[in-house]
Length: 90
Image (cartoon, rainbow, N blue to C red; front, side):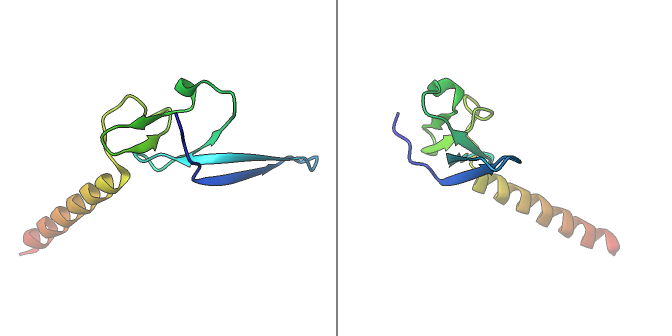
């Protein structure tokens, strides 16, 4: 599976040694995780064939719910709640 990294992470230990990792961003929960060369694919997440985005190990195998869709749903809930609160004032 070919993946293109989304970013880099630098971890500096207290003794001054530094580690560098390529990272991917989950298309479902927006989490970032490190890509470690030589790790089996099933432990590094997966790829959603519904939204065509990489997904983290936690979201792999679950339903497709892209982060943008989740944000839209939350905004709709908030809008409905605010409208209800306005109606209840009168």
